[in-house]
Length: 67
Image (cartoon, rainbow, N blue to C red; front, side, top):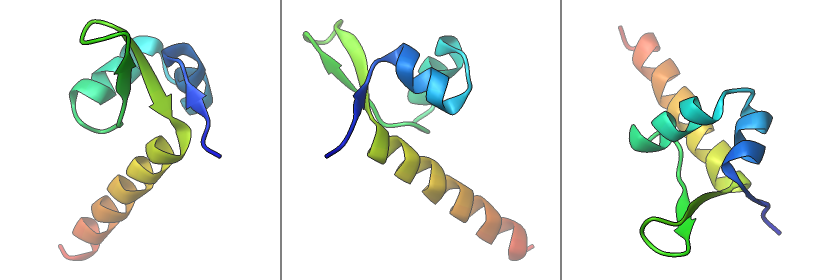
């Protein structure tokens, strides 16, 4: 079962600020969804967040190795 986290909870687990986490969402680095409509609160599926960050890390390492 996945953990659904608030912005504060997710930021704490990632050891970043809430502002940084929201910027990561804007930049497309971290998946999120909203509850309560378009202007509702952000929520994060922890498994999806970790998966997205691992994928980005893997792609970054592959790009470095191909240089």
